[in-house]
Amino acid sequence: MTVRVATAGAGVHEQSPRLGSETQPRPRTGPAAPKELRSRVVVVKFGGNAMVDASLQEAFARDVVELWHAGLSPVVVHGGGPQISAMLDRLGLEVRFEGGLRVTTEETLDVVRMVLTGRVQRELVGAINAHGPFAVGLSGEDAHTMTAVRRSGRVNGLPVDIGLVGDIVNVAPDTVRSLLELGRIPVVSPLARGTEGEVYNVNADLAASALAVALGAERLVMLTDVEGLYADWPHSTEVVERLTAAELGGLLPGLASGMLPKMEGCLRAVRAGVGRAHVLDGRVPHAVLRAVLDGRSPGTTVLPDA
Image (cartoon, rainbow, N blue to C red):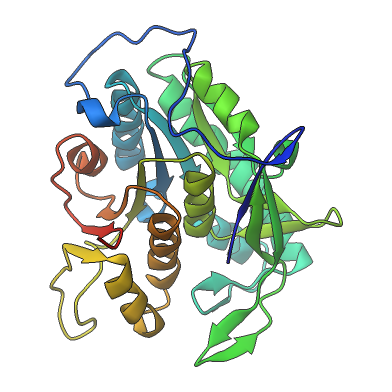
């Protein structure tokens, strides 16, 4: 699906891959980013069980701030699956997935919005801001940053109704870009408006992918709670270290439902100009820094076709 990129005043436009000057100086506290990455955007999707482990969340927050100090422009898109499921269970509401996506009724959507923007985002913003005045939270609903249409799930090749789940068709990145130019770290909840004012729950992996494309990001990083893409799951836990977009496209239909949105997001991103995409185990200390700053990805890297 093609995602349009819009500005507040003039419709679709080409995105500059680099940001302008910012108002906040950047003292170096660790290694600088490689020259080709400085001032480039890195979109990081934070999710999985790392989100419910306080020590892992704190380590992630430190790593994001370290990316900022290294001269990069990080943007965080967060999920909240475990927290949403826990709240739904507490309220006696059904927790159901089809094709790797949460079935979202109107009641479920109320819980999703409450948990994502009222709890998960606040905790993550607070963890980052423990290191300085960096993070600012917003939702894809804000300033029409993300616009979506209703998406159908697919199970065994057949469409299924998954409710108020959206697929992003338009991104207006001006608000996020303005925060980056001020030296802030945007923390984005994966919710989107429809063209008629309805609200959609958007898979965080696909939201991160669409935002990375709209911002002209150099890297997209997906944090999860597995080691990466397994070569022959469930028969083997051997991780595929690198593959091209074409190779991933051939594998995509046969992937397990939990990995499917992540790899679909990576594929969309690199096909639309993002330099490379990583799927990393968020339980590994400093996985983000190792992949982005050192080029030593502890998971799976997706590269554009040559």
